[in-house]
Length: 126
Image 1 (spheres, rainbow, N blue to C red):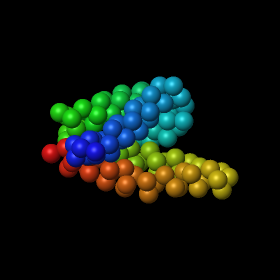
Image 2 (spheres, rainbow, N blue to C red; image 1 turned 90 degrees about the vertical axis):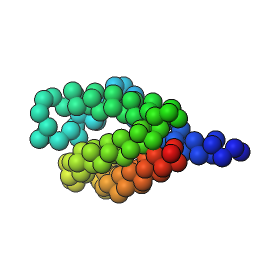
Image 3 (cartoon, one colour; image 1 turned 30 degrees about the vertical axis):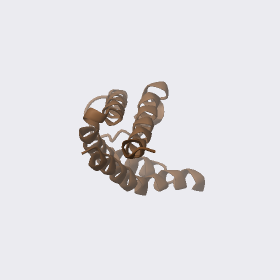
């Protein structure tokens, strides 16, 4: 495998993850609406759609070699920015079944590998 092709695989996988997540914000918005922090102004659905558009834009930026470095940096920032929504979701689900709680709380530490992945994509694009 060519070196550039092996370096692009993590970027394309990240773009795929972001793209699928972005589409689900439009296809199934209710779960996303529920985790929008109340401190944000406006309606939760607006924030759901805005974050879906952001994820689709990030997917495109990470997929394209010319914008991959910037896309990786912005994706890392996005993953950090949505962390409060994951905290809210875990807090809201604390009284639910053990399985539901495990999923909600299990998502929290996953933000760090996502941030690392996005930064790794950025570094490999330079």
